[in-house]
Amino acid sequence: MREIPGYEFGKVPDAPISDEEFELLKKSVMWTEEDEKYRKLACEVLKGQVEQILDLWYGWVGSNPHLVYYFGDRSGRPIPQYLEAVRKRFGQWILDTVCRSYDRQWLNYVYEIGLRHHRTKKGKTDGVETVEHIPLRYMVAFIAPIGLTIKPFLEKGGHPPDVVEKMWAAWIKSVVLQVAIWSHPYAKPGEW
Ligand code: HEM
Image 1 (cartoon, rainbow, N blue to C red):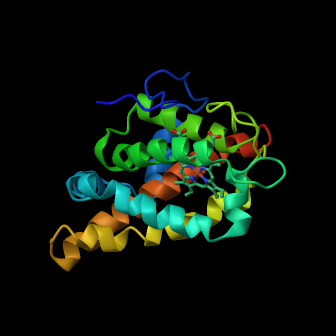
Image 2: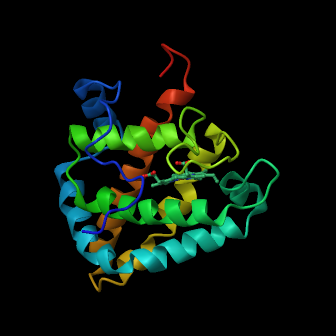
């Protein structure tokens, strides 16, 4: 596989989240064996559609000045090489979400993605002088567009509607699970 610059799956430190906390969080989003099964099917369905999904999401972010702002420099100009570099890792994230096992390595990299939105690491991976932090409220709000807009792509796999619903449920649960993990650096010690 081609190397994606800044994609450090398997190379990041351990997340400060215990295995037990991780398991209980999965239970709290109602993650079950059925979701495991259907997200693997979603892996097959979404594999060939990553670029189209990214076109949709980037088009939407790009048409919202208050969102594209976070891909810009401190005077508000978008940084094209930043947008492009993140796009490649975002594409890989779609695949990791539906195809990878949710083990410790996965948890560690998901945690890293949270840090990259937070002032701890935003802009550092690509070495850009960018707006330094993405507010938590937008991280939570994004569950709606990222969760909902995947459905037409799941439908393209040609599976019956009840199967599409199950793949979609697994996708939404996973996005919520990951945003819950991403909220960790945003919470004061003892509040997460
Ligand atoms: C980076 C997904 C919310 C802006 C990323 C990456 C992924 C991702 C997968 C690349 C991670 C990597 O480096 O491997 C998501 C998802 C979100 C979300 C699933 C919510 C459900 C947001 C919001 C904004 C945003 C609300 C603000 C408009 C960015 C920026 C980066 C980034 C600027 C680059 C961070 C860096 O400097 O490394 N996002 N994101 N994201 N995202 Fe998001």
